[in-house]
Length: 312
Image (cartoon, rainbow, N blue to C red; front, side):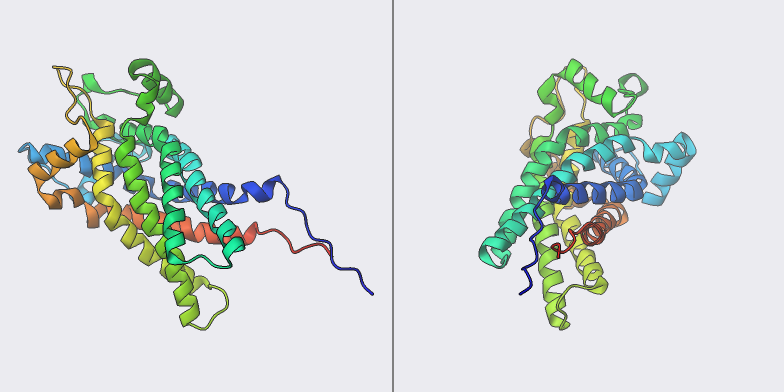
C-alpha cells in the first residue's frame, strides 16, 4: 500500500509571506499614484488658504500643471522614498496582519463571516497605522513643503534626514504627530476596504456559480471597494494632512491642538462639505486606483507565491 504523501512543513517564509506580499503590493501602487497623491495634498492644503479668503484654484489639472511649470517633474515624486517606507511599514503590517488573522480564523471556525472580517480589518488598520505614522508624517511634509514661505520650509534631504530632524527638533514622539486622525482614517479605510473587498468578491463568485474568484470578480470587487473606502476615509485624511503639515505661528501656537479642534475649525470655515474637498477630482482618483492596484497585486502575488502542494 502506497505511503501517504508527506505533509510539507511550514518554514519562516510561510509565516512572513502575507507581510511580504502586502508590502510589495502597496509599494507598487504607491509608485504608480505618487503624482496624484502630491496633487491631492496640495489641494487639501489650498482649502485652508481658500477658507481665509484667498483666491485658490483647486482644479487638479491646474494644480498639477502649476507644479510642473514652477517646480518640475521631480516635484510630483517628492517624498516618494517616504511613501515607499510608509508602504513597507503601514501596508506590510495592515495587509499582513489581516491575512494572517483571516486565515487563522478560517482554520479555526471554517469560515469568516462579515462580523469577523470587520473586527480583523479594524485590528489590522489600527496596528498598521501605528507602525506607519512616522513615514506618513514625513511624506506629508515633503509634499507640502513648497507651499510654505521660503523661510519656513523644512527642506528635508530624504526620509532618513526627515526622521532624524523631527526627532532632534521636535522630540521622538513627534514622529507620531497626527497619529489620532491617521489611526481613525486607517480604521475607516481598512474596515471598508478589506471587509467590502472580501465580502463582494465572495458574493460575486458565488452569484456567478464559480468555485474560486476569477479576474472579473477580483477587479469588480476592488473597484467597488476603492470607491467606498475613499468616500469614508477622506474627512479623516483631510484632517490628518492639516495636522501633520502645520507649523507654529509667530506666537508659538499651532493652528490646531487636537483632532477634534481641527475637525471643528474645518467645519466652521468650510462647512461639512469641506471635509470632502477634492473628493472626485483628486482623492478618489488617487485612493481608488491605489486600493485597486494594491488588492489586484496582492491577489496576483498570493497566487504566484503560494506554497507548492505537499510533497509526494
